[in-house]
Length: 217
Length: 217
Image 1 (tube, rainbow over the protein chains, first blue to last red):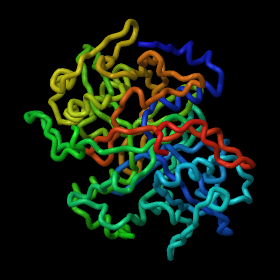
Image 2 (image 1 turned 135 degrees about the vertical axis):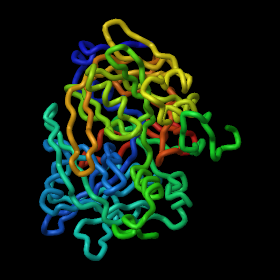
Image 3 (image 1 turned 90 degrees about the vertical axis):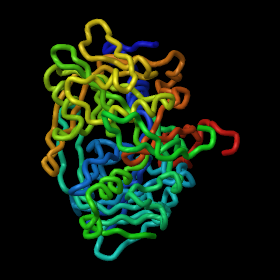
Image 4 (image 1 turned 120 degrees about the vertical axis):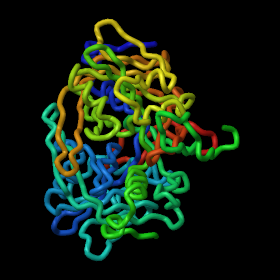
């Protein structure tokens, strides 16, 4: 194995290190976060740090960097208390990546990157019409990560819109049918294929596959 | 689109809701977190909430639930201040899933699920020999998420071991060559294929593909 220690990481050039460390978390979901300010001026940002926080209450989180390109997103969330998470489909990964450019605050990434804002009654943040899985969230909490001056933004799920027929019998979404993009590092986009759905694991049972999805498995 | 509002989520049965909400974050990296207590009794847990926190200092995080099956992992991290994150290869996803069973504290998931603990000099937490990407971390901080009594555990990267030839010229890992597993929901395992590496996005440039990885793109 190739081994890199803390001194080796510290000695890396800044961009090289950013590429390296960003790669270590493997596959990440590609999501577009939609926000607006109090004048309903829209903003859209691709985020690869969305995580599940908990199911009850229904919470999702993401890491925001106050001093980088996502500062407008964070500012809007603090103003309105609202944001949307829109899963990025493979069909639009090139558009999605363009939202990471550092546009001036008065420019909307929706227009520049080729996405359509969608407004729902009683929710003052824009969804992405091109997304097959859209989530409306209300700001629940912001935790400061003192180690590097970033913030964990936590939202409570208000509304979910998803293509029909995707929710399976046990509540799980059949993500594969949505053909969503995954990201590795800062710039590489992937598609995925399901291999298997596993049964709930128990100490006294061997691991059990409920369903294989590919004939070659 | 199928629409589910907050009342609809609240009305779901507990396990159905867990499956549904866990699905909303899309593709998640599958990682095995290795720990031990002060007597070097080992523990291994599959975690799908590992995220990049920052590159400088090099930080990764994960969400832990103090009262669930990962309570031993969290207890060990608090005891020793150390843990490892080991990317789960597709070849071992069935073994990896088995570590989510609720074994008694005195049982090691390494043995039960068929993984080999690997010890490195001067680091008192076990790696997973079967993983092609292993990361040693020292506990940096634990943030309490009051909204649902979970914790964001943040570690500082001490050491990275990766298969030779995987680090590319710009520091990015060629994750696809490691054939890592991705998870959706609580129990569905996927493999992924790279589509494209994109250039750094700029407002005045159209989005630019540096490299396509599949002939059919």
